[in-house]
Image (tube, rainbow, N blue to C red; front, side, top):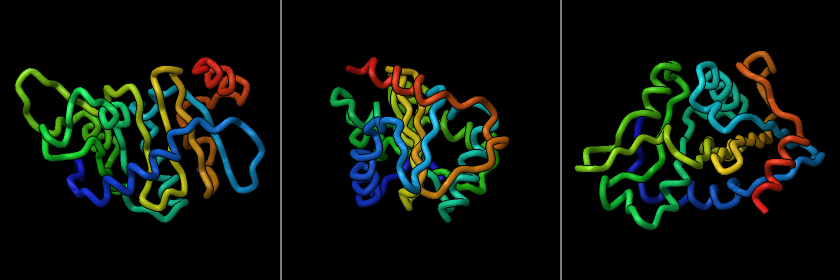
Amino acid sequence: MGYISDVQLYRRLTQTAEVAEQWQLPRLSEGVSRRYFDWLEFAVGGFWQYLTQLAHLSGDTVIYFYDLYRAKDTRFDFYANFGLFPVIELSVEMTERQYLSGLRCEPGHLEGVTYVAAYTDEYLILPPSGKWHIHGAYEIEMGQLVSYVGLPAPEVFPHDFWSEEEALRRIHLLR
């Protein structure tokens, strides 16, 4: 597990990201669950268990952490510098400690450049099936989970979810 180098996989994830990174306004939709929370929850103890439960619901064995901020950065060609893409593949068999370490590992050494995925300004967490995703952004300090396979039990999530009203308020800050 680590940063991906597969061009076809990266292209597929990028196509999925183009749809998934759009903020979805809270509304009733048959078969769609949405939750909102602090955008940095992905780096908090206890969140990995929630992600692995989502993967279990969708039948996935890996989860991708896609650094959207770095992928969109035209000033720095991640692939040209490291031979890798700004996406980390994570096995659901990993421990929480391995997950957190994976988010803090560097893709390689480049003089004068420090890159750690956990310090991104925008990310997408998703499985290969695309049956759920989490989009987080520093700009509005919010993470949004959209799931088509239901949700893990509430006690699995270590912190509180935000109300739909709070999510709407933050989404409207972008306009």
